[in-house]
Length: 262
Image (cartoon, rainbow, N blue to C red; front, side, top):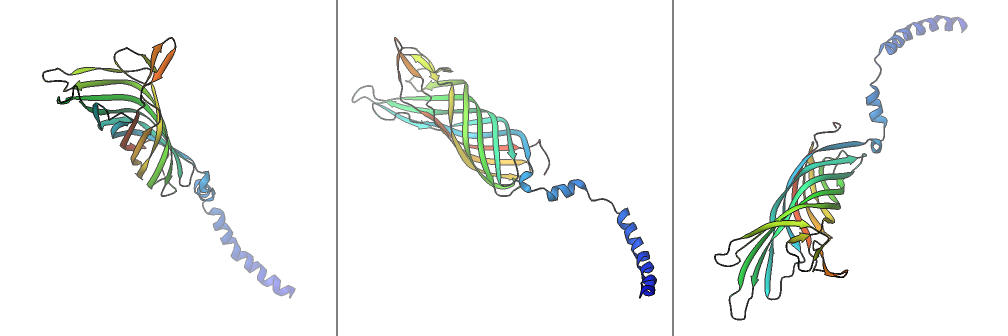
C-alpha cells in the first residue's frame, strides 16, 4: 500500500501545479465591484442637485366676499426658478430641498354697491408677491434608486422680497393706479399703501416622476401664516385684519446635473 501511494501521489501533485499557477496568475476581482456587491443597499448614500424651474397658478384664501362689496378671487399665473437637491441613503426614501425665487399673487374683482338702486361700481386689483422660498420634503420613490414615480410632502418657509399692485376699472375714464407692495409686520391705522407680512410658511404635497437626472413634479402649496399685518391703533394697542393666506398649484422641472452617477 505504501508503494502504491508513492506511485500516485507524485502524479497528483504534478496535476495540481498547473491549476495553482493559473490561480496565482488570474487577475484579482475589482475591489469596487466586490464592495458594491457586499455593502448593504441602505449604506449607500448619494446627493444630487441642479437647476429647477417651474410655473404656478396662485391665489389666496380667506378674503371676505360678502357684504356691500361683492368680491371674487381669481388665480394669477406665476413662475419660480432656483436650485434643488435630493439626498438619499438607499431604499425608497429621499429628502428633497430647494431654494427658489417664486412669484405668487392673485386677482381680486369687486362689485361695490355705492347706493341702493344704483349700479355696482366694478374694480379689478392685481397683486404680485415675490418670495425667496425654501421647501423641504420627504419623498417615497417607486424604485430604490430614486427613479420612477414618487409622492412627496413637507413644509416650506418663504421671505417676502417685493411686490406690486395695479387697480383698474375704478370708473369710466379713471386711470389705473399702480404701486409697490411692501413687507411689514404692522402698519398704522390710517397709513396708506399696501403691505403683507415679511414671512410666510405652510405645507406642500404632490406627485412626481424621475427619469435619469430629470425630475418632474406637480403639487399644491397651502399657506398657514396670514399675510395681513397687524394694525396699530395707538398707545401700543393693535388689532389684526381678517386673515388671508397664500395657496397655489405648481409644476416644476428639475435637472440633477451634479452628483454621483448611478
